[in-house]
Length: 418
Image 1 (cartoon, rainbow, N blue to C red):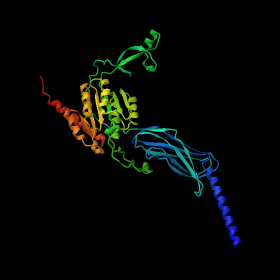
Image 2 (image 1 turned 90 degrees about the horizontal axis):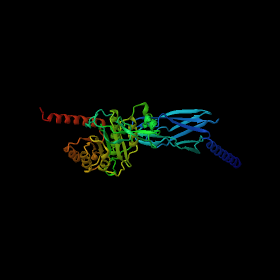
Image 3 (image 1 turned 135 degrees about the vertical axis):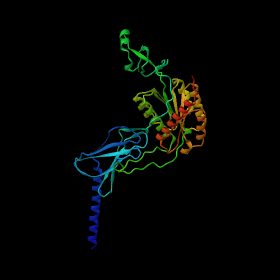
């Protein structure tokens, strides 16, 4: 009896050892000749869009795979694409679509991707990490704007401003010799043929007013409320799209407002410039082309509330280069008198300021926004108040309607002359 029991235990030990060795060997080859490919229709999207990505797993081996666990380890918030695939036959391809609701701006790598597989009993597991090859650029959220105050600038068709422009305008002022870096479209071929060397045209600025957007990204003026990031179900695309809300942060509200205004003005064929310091001092000269909107949105995708320059400093640096009569839209959450200083600098140069003031106390910041807004309104400066958790489209529409009503009242209050 003892001998029979010993033989049984020995057989069981051999079987256990054989099982461990075979499962280990199975695990070692479980990812052999497996290839995964990720494809996206576009590597550029906006907050609120649905990003679609195709995952294709190819089994190039003659051996089947019991299961393959695909993990999308991208830093993209709420990134979809992780999937457990079972029983992948020899030479078989598996494809599926992953849809991600974009809720945060910035650049996000599409990966890395981790493949994991093992033996049927779960004794061993092998993982293969595949680095990312592409990145997704998520542009800021653009809200629909139907109207916004348009302070009158210099009359179109007036004298051309005697100031050189780096861009092509309808006002050519002369020619000069070509230098490295000049665009080929600026070459004046008749002058080049006469002089025997390349000559390029010089242009002057358009006499119409420009719209300049100043985004205050100074670190000391920002406020933010802590909130848990939203969580979406994997099958949300088949039920109902989740509602997108901006984080309760002044810099996020400011970025979205700047992007929306740039989009609105360029749609109106108006020249738009952009200035910020978040955290790098950036100036985008005023243009009215669609390319200008792309430059502004791409810049805003990386803006952070870590700037060092105050709003008055931004205005002081850029206002001397702005055409007379232009409008300056100041987007800020500051409660300091620095905002009033910036307004004074603009008015001294015959520039028209419009303030979009994010009420800091509603974002968990200091008090003082209401008092600052009242001071600005006493100076007849248009002020649009933005509170946390309000519809930006409605707030801007109400501001535009109120501004137009006040202008009509002021016009009717003027004494009539005969």
